[in-house]
Length: 355
Image 1 (spheres, rainbow, N blue to C red):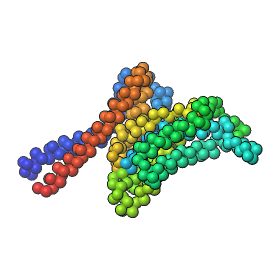
Image 2 (image 1 turned 30 degrees about the vertical axis):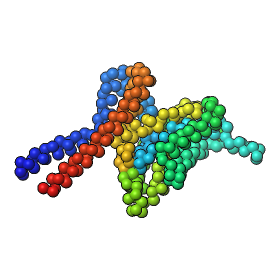
Image 3 (image 1 turned 90 degrees about the horizontal axis):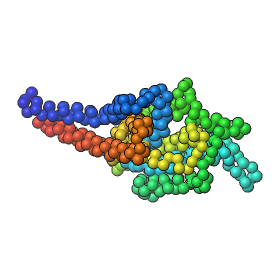
Image 4 (image 1 turned 180 degrees about the vertical axis):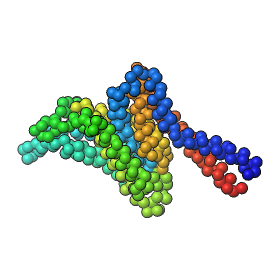
């Protein structure tokens, strides 16, 4: 090996090591926040606190998983927080009031399973609206989902004139007394919300990594025109990701309404920001084409532990908002740096091969 080759190889190895650290940044951040709050907050690692934190993380992780698919395609979904509020109100309304068929002279009540299905369909339907606005009417994703954010929140407020649907303990007569189990129950000692997250997370990771649809999602985000020329149904792929995002948001609405045994139309405000933060922190590129579900879930843990840890330390909610904003900015800056570093390494390798 020549002296020039040796000197060129050393910087390349240094850059490669730096790139490895950048790719592992989410895990490093997770370890850092756990160690910090373990030392700074009493009882942080207690079993009870870990269970509570995991349930909080699950809510953000659901939204972040759906958001990841959307961002990979080069889009954004600002409506997920409002979908959470709307779906919580839909579930609460169905538990308390059923559906009044005044023209037939009676009211239809649904059992818990049927309420879950109907609520999930509402979330998917809002996703369909988002998808149609973006694919058929060519509305920019930011504007389309900003519009549905307001529409969904307004519908949630109209459903109860801004009031809360209380006492959602259900009725044994109508088969709704199991509704609180969704948010407070457990399976094999594991909270239902965590079990649901495992199912959704594993399913989403398999879809992204092992199915043609997953490859289409990445292709659309990488180069939409090239994807279309290769025969990929770009509009159908985009429709799916927004429907899936709405589905994930509906799950969160159900869980929160069940946990609180009440639903309020303001539920889910700013949830979309936490979801975006978790996805970006987990390595999803805002420019599209890159992201992994596993990284997103780890990112959700970082955001969740950071939020709960700051609360345990008595940090002001105002400062918590500032810190979250700084985390989002830092995640985007690091992601941009990683992309530039990858390009630099690729150019160095091409130059080495050309010698």
